[in-house]
Length: 368
Ligand SMILES: NC(=O)c1ccc[n+]([C@@H]2O[C@H](COP(=O)([O-])OP(=O)(O)OC[C@H]3O[C@@H](n4cnc5c(N)ncnc54)[C@H](OP(=O)(O)O)[C@@H]3O)[C@@H](O)[C@H]2O)c1
Image (cartoon, rainbow, N blue to C red):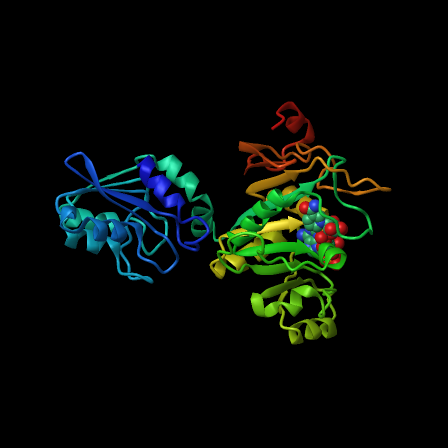
């Protein structure tokens, strides 16, 4: 099963909104074929394995990281194909909570006499597909917070020119994160300060994310780089009740999708998340600035965090602090499963966000 999970991982960033899935066919104690879901719309892992195995699939055991599907989607149902291929038993990590599957795949297999065993490496498999499972089970996407912080605790110089805090290697990783995301979110403060494009440019471009600006008063410049590049991918401007109709009309004329959202705080994240998830968005990258990130964490919405910690100094008078200044453990945020890599002169610290809205003293007692 661990091999199946490693194969599943190959689909990361390519299969969404589907889950990542890997599979093996085993016969007489030997692996006769491997398969994985390689891209959205491409054959599922089980089908790839059956195709590779050919006649050897007959009488083999399938080891698969998710319950085989039983419905016609972009591709035909896998459970039926397994029956046809003559597979004798199936070992799967967990049920697929997608209501179109959810136990139906297992039931179909068992009805035809195939021996099915569930729950092998279930926890690991659920961890691998946590963003997919969250979207299917709650109707909300997986929020990924990302920011770059200088050695003096700044995310930018105040009122100054846009500046690069990290080096080229960190930038490549940040762009790769965009390339794997279904939407990239920033606040209007960032748009006005940096005139960003928010596209994935410095690494393999897996898909074009929706670019989303949180802009209560519809102040996004219609002639800025975001809307001038609308042909590259959709731009959503999320406005509040205070946005003037005239501004919204200008933005629509420039090609923006104007989203009218009355809710703020946790409700705001939930409403936006529900809209994005309904469009099949699973991974949402929130890039800042400081106010938006702080709000995301304060309302317990963040699921995963990526901090690029630079050895460079922003300096100057009164640089703009990150979500919590220099203290990455303040704000009640603790990470679990933390991984730290060195990227030239920068550190890349990432993990799952664990404690949501814990008190500052609790976080000081358990630094991450
Ligand atoms: N180092 C980094 O990783 C990084 C990344 C991004 C940006 N930056 C820097 O950050 C600076 C901008 O940061 P900032 O804090 O001034 O602005 P920001 O976070 O980009 O935008 C804040 C504004 O967004 C609107 N907004 C809408 N919904 C919000 C919500 N849920 N939470 C918070 N704000 C919301 C508010 O304006 P309305 O009331 O008008 O809606 C608010 O004033 C820029 O200088 C940029 O260069 C750095």
